Length: 296
Ligand code: BQF
Image (cartoon, rainbow, N blue to C red; front, top):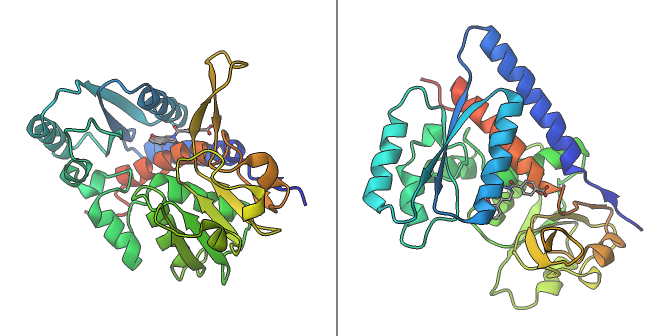
């Protein structure tokens, strides 16, 4: 078998188009444009790229946005005060603090200082908790994007064995929770693997759906998966490539060439899950502006 491609670029364009239309309707009904405040701390080049992608998407769908650039010397207290002002500013619908943070800042503390009603990344414990118990919440954008892809391609999850590799708070953990929920996309038997998993292949080989978010190029190879598996590769790794102008190319956590020979469906990197993450941020920002999750 050679896998069919899950086209995240295409589905993200469709999703953004939907949001653009919804924003237009929202404004025609007499409301102001949704507003996303991005907070970018320090000078991480990858973060610059991600924030650039997010602000471009905002412009495209009619969401207003501003990026507040703060020095990496900012203290926890100063940052908390800054976020507090944004929490209390009625013209701000969504607040996104770009991760990773400089090491002297605690991401737990920073995330918890954001008003959960403006937490469009879905990282606040209130949103994570509500997601876990099945109450309406902002869903973390990458997991939500993965679900949008499964929905678009009508890939069934009920009763399947879903194996998630990577247990991060941003991707692996929430994906595993969502896949095991009793919802229309869900009802999967879920295994979560991480760096202490003894025999990774023993688990990946039995996966009907394999979500890989480990941050390690070629972690998953063809021999480690079953014929017909659906592979969602969340990894974004820079590897040196002298044929590219930038000097590097992006690869996922799967050895694409060998895995695609066995999979029924696979996400490419780039152009798979990544663009969906940005599209779902647009959706969340509109939900925040409409106060859809947390009505007043
Ligand atoms: C694509 C991210 C690791 C750490 C912090 C499109 C994005 C990426 C890839 C993007 C990511 C990854 C984001 C592609 C946002 C996804 O074409 O494949 C878009 O902008 N992402 C982030 O904000 O912080 C990260 C990964």
